[in-house]
Length: 477
Image (tube, rainbow, N blue to C red; front, top):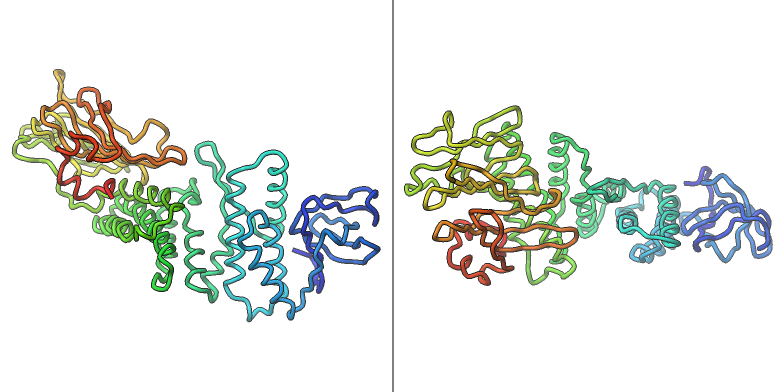
């Protein structure tokens, strides 16, 4: 911002405008200016304005055609706001729009300022962050970097997080918080809440206690938005965001015994309800990926909503099942037990730092295999498969995918008669693509034999899928 109080400023409207040492085109170039830069006007000579750039602490001359002279008097505030409204949704003009919004905030009487200008600032900072995350090369990259510097000069700093070798830039959220604090429309508050609660903008360096507090705050922000008068498209987006946030809270509550088992169950049930509240007829094509994203998040934590009664300790299984005990601090140990082996002398024991969902335990009819859901991350759920062989029992992990844990789950869906195969459903995000498959898995190798994108397209899956799985899964929607 400018260091002194001014009533008239010059706002640069053209990128790569030259600040020259004298009022002529052949004069030495003092600096390169970009759209959105604000300049103090100190005089006029021919086609040039004599100006001072407080950001660079440099004086010079600039062509009058490359700037817009703008009054900062209170009576001119409506004109500034009109320009902000125009630039708010103009891609590539974020720095210029932020400059006009800053000028409006300086000109407008304090009592007349509501959430509209901050809604525009939040919108432009989010769009600038998306552009910067996508990245540009060559001249476009140079221009983008300059626009980021202009925005930062007005306090619109972007925060950056590194995930999987890529930098994600996000708005700092200051403008969006002001929208929620000031008189604003329901739509403006909804957009601010969506911006503040983006999953990709959750700081990856948070410790588990800090993440728990952060996600509770995200849930509170979303709860403050009244849905009644919102368009269906916006309602859908809020339901999708809530589904993702509450699924994360279900996982985190399950990791904190002090909050109680019912708290995790309530959070998971809320996540499922939010996903079910989606109005499919109003789901935009641009929201398809967000819908898949939310469904995978809910699917990863859905076992938190189930009663703590295992699926499968049936009579035919001769009491085969699992017992879970505490290991080292934060660790859970899974003991495979049957009628003659308890947790003190189990058939097999394996420990994990993830959450074990005992209710998911599914025993094969021949009592020679057992499938169990284990969730190491809030967005990643694996399947443990216990198998009986000639040398006794073994356990192997079937992950949703074979890349770095990101977003996905794989779950038991049924046993195929004959004892050679099991059914599994899998949803995973790979880069920007989402994939849902229904598979037959060899119990001998745990390799997928066949797969299809719909249960009905795979005969064994269609015939032998578990009714309990079908009743509770979110992979079929």
